[in-house]
Structures are given as C-alpha cells and as structure tokens.
Length: 277
Ligand code: ZN
Image 1 (cartoon, helix red, strand yellow):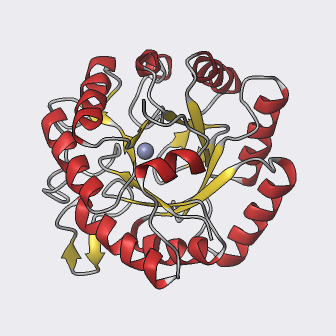
Image 2: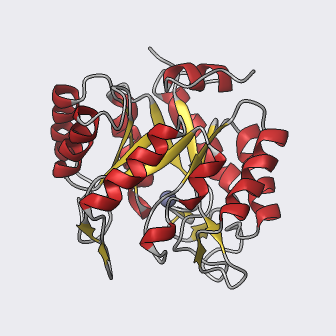
C-alpha cells in the first residue's frame, strides 16, 4: 500500500504554554520543534504563528521565518501554512500566502466551534482559493461538515483549484462533527464520488486523535495528522513531552497497521507536489 505522510500540527491557535509547556510559540521554538518532529518521521508541518503574548497572529514575516528555518533544517519537508480563522482578522488570513508555502489549509464553509462560529464566508473562501491557485500552493481542504466537500468541488469547477486537493476530515471538535467511524465512511465515500482525484487524511481532536488515526490507516489514508495543535496529551494523565513524541507514536501506529512511513520525497509525490530541486 502507499506510504503514509505524517503531518504534524505543531502549534495551532488554541493551546498555550500553561496548558502544555512544550507548545512552541516563538519562531525559534517552532523551528526546533519541527526539526525534532521531522527526525521522528514527520514529512509535513502545519504552521500557525503567535504574537508575543501567545495569541494567534497573521504576521507574514513570522510565517516566512518559520518556513525558512524548516527548509534549512528539514530537507524536503512539506510546509503548510494555516489560513484558519480562530482569533484572526479575516482580511489578514491570506497575507502569508505571498511566501508560497507548498500547501495551505483552506476551509470551504462555516461551522460551530466550542465557543465561536467558525465563519468562512463564500467570498473569503473564493479569495483564499484564488490566491493559492495563483501562487501554486496546493490546498488542504478542512472538512468540518459534509457540505464542505461540495464547497471544494465548486472551487474545482470554477477553476480555482486543480483536481488533486488534499482533503482532511476533522472529527471530534465540540459542536461540529463527532469522531464516529461510520461518519468517516460516509465522508470518504462522498469525497471519492465528487472529488475522485483528492488525496485524504483525517484528524481526531483531543482524546480522539489515536482512534481516528487508526480508522484512517485501516482505510488506506494518504496521510495521518498529529501534533500539539490537536492534542496536548499522551494519556489522560500525562502531557505530551513534545511534538516529536506524538509523531513517534503516530509512526508506531503506521507500522502496526502494516503501512510504511513516507520519506520526504515519497510524501511530495503522494500529495502531488514538486520534488525539491
Ligand atoms: Zn491549524
């Protein structure tokens, strides 16, 4: 079967150091944490950046600095910027895309989150997709609801995306989709029906991380996702020591499922990205 890309979401916009001191929030910490995760088998890094007070930032210079460090220390690793909305001004969410990361996350619709409405107006979705298309950035479509699959299909029909987006089903966010194996089958079947050229992965949030990963691996997923953005614990009673520890656990699970962890070159080929020159 195809090798498995391990994606590491190192920071996110929610966890703070008071929740887990290992959450990297400065540019230097993010590069170091990514490097350790890369050594442990991660081949894709999903990046949010933070202000000095740990609140979410959209500063394109910070994104560029993390990307530069990752490219220097982690040869071939896929760099993915978040355009996610929590705590960010909508008009600033795409500013980092001028720095042409390999990939960027793209939400194609709105949904309820634990304490906010995660708002993605159709105009914003179109704008972000157009900017990614213009800059040669492959989108990772964040699927928080079934309708978001059809949102991605519309972007392909409108010529704002090619036929091979990477699709991520996000399960276990309170007030959005629960982590349910049957639901994953429905989402996957619908994606294969309407976006047959898509690659896919699934992310389980919090204590659902390992369970969702197991379901994805059993169904031939192109990638799995781990990292402190989604989950700060290894067990109920123990915080993860680092992003690298979570990546090591993911790599073990890949092997247990008789799959192989992708190399950077294999990861790029799997997700329709150019090899590194
Ligand atoms: Zn994110």
